[in-house]
Amino acid sequence: MQIEAEAPVQEPRSREGDGIVLRDVERRFGRGGVEALARLSLRVRGGEVLAVVGPSGCGKSTLLELVAGLQQPDRGTVSVLGAESPRGRRDLCAYMPQNDLLLPWRDALANAALALECQGVGRREARRRAEPLFERFGLAEFERARPAELSGGMRQRVAFLRTLLAGRPVLLLDEPFGALDSITRAAMQEWLAAALGGEPRTVLLVTHDVEEALLLGDRVAILSPRPGRVAAELEVDLPRPRRRRKLVGDRRFTDLLGRALDQLEAGSA
Image (tube, rainbow, N blue to C red; front, top):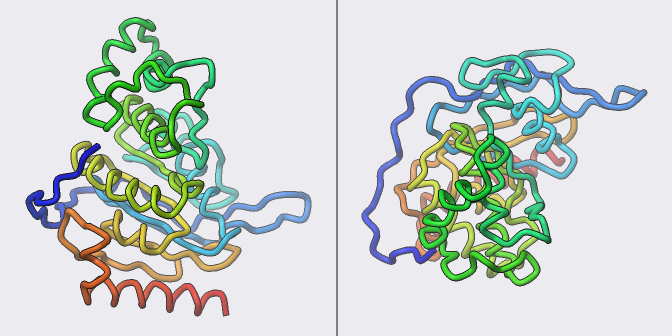
């Protein structure tokens, strides 16, 4: 997707109601009861992009799987748009894991259309619905390419398009660009920011990159080392669209970055 250099400035979007709510959530694993999350409480407002950062092993991916209904908390409650049952949460969430998980025997269009096929849409009709979006997502002329023929950034775009085509109101993104090189990752961060601007959803994004969290998020939640709990939350009151080159010279951005890094370092200490 080509991002216009002079796109109009968008002020932070208004929020209404709760999208995701976790109250006093605890999660343990294994015979010894290793605690991944401890009394974690978190709220994502409807239509908001909340970015979650924290050290490795603090339970970020576990958090997403709890919201997605793939796990259940040992204590506490998780709700998505008011739904608390695992099935209810699964029906409302589209989950994009760290790896793109594209099927190597399917071309890009068929991979994206898979989300519709899983809902019972016929293969031909699913492809017909998905195809017009390829130009919009910067994938025109690559509809028939197999995953092995696509760059890492293109594979992530196909995976994100598949996630959107699931049609769910809540998106869960688990370090979507973690496997990319720094140059591609920076380009994809701006691309995702623009894509989310055109497809507003309630988004919970997990990332290890603090700058990425500030570039994409309306708020940033910082988790403590394991067992993970919310150590701090930061409002990212920066207008959109956000461009990395402009942000690095913006005092508001550098102040937020410093505050986030201070919290992470304090937790690690």
